Image (cartoon, rainbow, N blue to C red):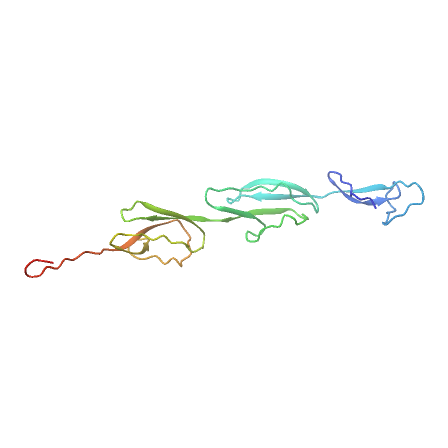
Length: 193
C-alpha cells in the first residue's frame, strides 16, 4: 500500500480505485502482476466551525475545521492577575484539542480568579501583598514582629481576627490586631526599684 495518505484541501481521501469511475476499490495488500494505475477517490469534506468566546461571551475567533480534523489555531487569553486555564464546551471540563471535530462547537474560557490580599502594619502602611486563587486558603500567612507588643492576628474589620481556613472569594485588606504591652515600674516606700 502507498506509504503516505494523500491530502487535498477541502476533501477527505476515501481510498485507491482501479477504475476512473471509482467503483472498484483496491484492497491492500495489493500485489500487481502488470503495470497498474490507481485512482484516488476524494469526498468533499464537511467543514465545522469552532467558535471561541471570551469571558464576556463575545465571539473572539472562529476556526473552520474539516470533518474529523483537529483545531490547530487555538487562541489564548491573558489577564493581569487571573489565570487562563484553557477552553471548555461545558464551562467546567477542559476541551481536548486532539478530539476529531464532527460538529460545530462553541468553546468558553475556564478562568481562575486571583485575588490580592494586602496586609498593613501597625501604622497602616503596606506590609505585604499575596495573590491567592479563588476559593483557596491562604498559605504562608505573614506575621508581624513587634518589639514589645503582641501580634494576635489579622483582621478585615480591625476588630475580629480573620479565620484563614476561610476560602478567599474577593480582594481583602488585613490589619493587625495588637495587644499593647505596658511596662510597669514598682517603687517601694523609699522610692527605689
